[in-house]
Image (cartoon, rainbow, N blue to C red):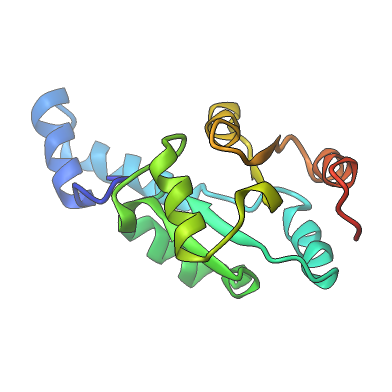
Length: 154
């Protein structure tokens, strides 16, 4: 689903067929997946400070089309980003180099001038493997400190 190869409807059917889940169970599972994606505490305030200092900020999300559309309708922070790449729209996922290269090529970004931030270490390591500076997000204060150690001024 995160590569855009299967819809939520098809995935629900597969869960029911292969795992024996009931229709109600799969509907409940997908409901909670959809409705429990929350903004990490302090992250939007950090994005606002970084943007105010004239840095560009891009979103790179591994997500399902239907869930991404739901998130866009629920949260108004998407306009803060200078661009966004969604795994299900480009057919590749983090931590594979293809998705990072897609971001770099699509927005004409120089990897040597870019910091990748993610809460999952394997995604940060994937970005580092192709030349990004990388930070594993633990909380906004830690992330801000690491950005400043890399030389960002905000």
